[in-house]
Image (tube, rainbow, N blue to C red; front, side):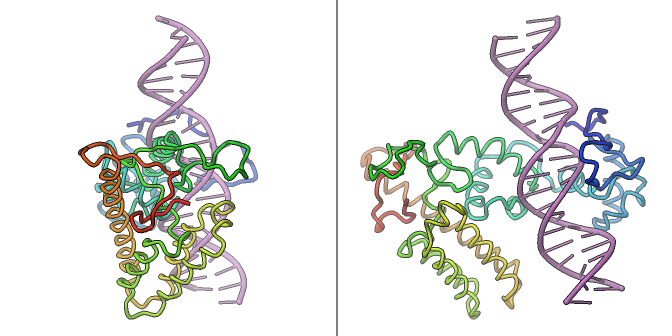
Amino acid sequence: MASSSSSGWKNSSNKSSSKTPCCTKIGLKRGPWTPDEDQILSNYVQKEGEGRWRTLPKRAGLLRCGKSCRLRWMNYLRPSVKRGQIGEDEEDLILRLHRLLGNRWSLIAGRIPGRTDNEIKNYWNTHLSKKLISQGIDPRTHKPLMNPNPNIHSHEPPPPLVVPTSISNPNFIHPSLDESSPCISSLEMSFNEVTEGNDSHHEYLKGITTLNADQDHHNLESSDGFIMGFRDMEEDLHHHTEFNNDDVFSSFLNSLINEECAHQQQQQQQQQQQQHPTAKNQVPLVDYTTPVDSSTQSFGYS
DNA sequence: AATGCCCCCAACCGCTGCGAG
DNA sequence: GCTCGCAGCGGTTGGGGGCAT
C-alpha cells in the first residue's frame, strides 16, 4: 500500500486560485498518509468514535483536514474494510446493483460488506466498464452499444451480437420499456410486498409506467430513465413512508436483485435447452438481436 | 539497462443535502 | 424562511508501479 509520504502529490498552492480547497490552511498536510498518521488517526477514532471530523484533526493532533481524515478512515483504516481482490460474486453483485442504481457508489457499497464506495467506483471505472465495453455493452445503460453504422434509420436488424451472460444480463436494464413485461409485474409485486398497507407505492408504480410513455426519450436522451425512476422512488420512499425507510428500500432492493437473479438463471437454462437440448454445463450465450418471446423471456430487449 | 507508456487507485475537489440556530 | 456549518457523495486527478520496447 502506498502510505508513504510523497513530495509530488498535488500541491496545495496549485492551479485554480479562485477555488479554495478545504485544507488550504497553512501547515496542513496533503497527499499520501504516513504509517504514523494512520496510527494516530486509527487510535483516536477507535477511542473516541467516528464523527466530528472537522475538529478531529486538532483533537487528535493531526496536520490534516477533517475531510482527509474521514476519507482515510472510511476507505482504509476502518476495521471492517475488506482488502484484496473483488471476487466474482461481488463483481456480479456490483453489476446488478449498478444496473439498478447507476453511479450511486455509496448505495452500492452499502450492500457489499467490507467494500467502500471509492473502491467500487475505482473497480467499476478500471475493470467493469471496460469489460462491458469489450462485450459490446454500454456500461452506463447496460444495453448493447449503439451500432456505429451511420445508416441509423435502417430497418435492417443490427448484426448479431453474442455476449456471454455470465457477466451480466443487459436485457434487464429497462423493464419500464414494456409494460407487459413480467419485470414490471415483479417490480409491482416486490414493491407491494414491502409497502403493503401504504398507498404511496401506487405513486411509484405510476412513476414506473409513466416512463413507458416516453421511452425513447429516456433511452436516447436521458439514457438512465429507469435509474432516474428508481431514484425518484427511493426519494419518495424516504419522504412518504411511515415505516423505517431504509429497511423498506433495502427490502425492495433485495427483492429486485433476487428477482433479477432468478430470471437470469431461468433464462439461461431455457436458452441452453433451446439451443443445445443435450448440452450441459456450457457457458450460455445470448443473441441480443433476436426478438424475444415474452412468454419465455422476462427482460425484453428493445 | 534505460526509457516511455499505460493503468490503477488513493486522495483530492466541488457540490449537495441536512440539521441547527 | 434564511443562513451557516458539517458530513457525505460522486467525479476527477496524478503519482507510482508494471509492462513493453
